[in-house]
Image 1 (cartoon, rainbow, N blue to C red):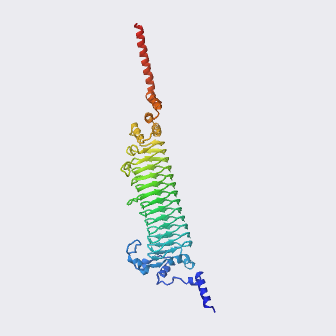
Image 2 (image 1 turned 120 degrees about the vertical axis):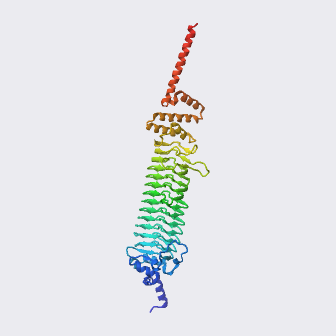
Image 3 (image 1 turned 90 degrees about the horizontal axis):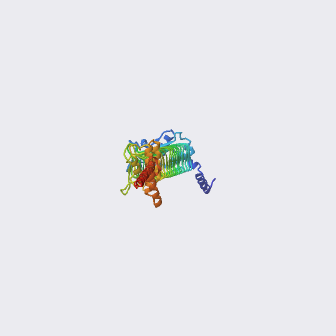
Length: 507
């Protein structure tokens, strides 16, 4: 017969080792919330607590001061969710459709870290009063916490999933942490509201990352993330910073209105980002700045109608298609050493450009050493004198040059306070390519005049004056000045010789 001390020791070891004492929890009592939910789950049905509590219409998780959320009929311990997902005696009885819970108030934290989840976990229109912890979990099934409210953090760092993560429509009171996670499907935050940070640094997604449809965030961190599909922020609102340096996107990066609401951002960091498709911010509202130095865009970069008097830096950017900023409101656009394989569009159809500044002045456009295959503009597309920088610019075809004479283009080049021969050379080449050789010669000649105007070496200034007035800088038809000078000198010489001869013969 066992002594009392030995029996106590045996019971302690049994509990600690997960023996029969732990196995007694079967959730067979359907009078309890757990038992009722388990009966439905093992039959492949969703456990909808709005049905159990006879609540119609169903409760909204985001509703304020809704007393029915505390009804005992819908209170479900988080330990139940953990058990049916991880205890083989229960999880083996869950159908392939997985665990589906609706309208529950889940008390405590759902801690599934370091676990293998062999079934889908779907929680909808519920309130979770603790945290959800999925760190380093492994699964081939879907995970969903949608249209709910989560009181604490959702942490899913280093998760490996062969499926998708649906976090749409949920109100998150604390941060959501997806660092180093990998999902072969999509990750969905549509219409979600985050009161804190979405930290998705080094996240990998095999399909789309969806943060659209009036989703609201304090901060979003996507540094080093790799998204094989699209990153869609259409009609999203960010109160703080979107940090996405070194982001890799296999599809498009989208930040557009949805027809009713604008996409609103404060600051965006895209340094060194790689976007295989387009970057589209048509009509977005940007109250701060975009730092996209060194960004690579395989398709178009569309900033058409961008609002908010933003500051954009795209130094050394490479754009495989067009850069369209028609109708944008900009305090600064910096494109030094940027390369645009398609067309740089500053004007055309739609509203004109608005070059604005916080101090009531005018915004600036920096095109130093920038390259574009073609330029499309209108006369009112450009910032005023002193706010345009053109040193080293390289332009191909001038699509908007018709209707403006060479004098207009000279005034355009003079908007840059620092002289550079590049704008005049590029304009000359563009006019020549268009078949207007006279305009090409004239703009080159005006460029040499301006070069002489800023010459500080006195002897060089005098020499250039001789070249200007004596030979038209040897440019096109202006070279005929040398002939005119020669003919004039010859005429003077003939007149002088004739006069001298008359004087001699009259003696």
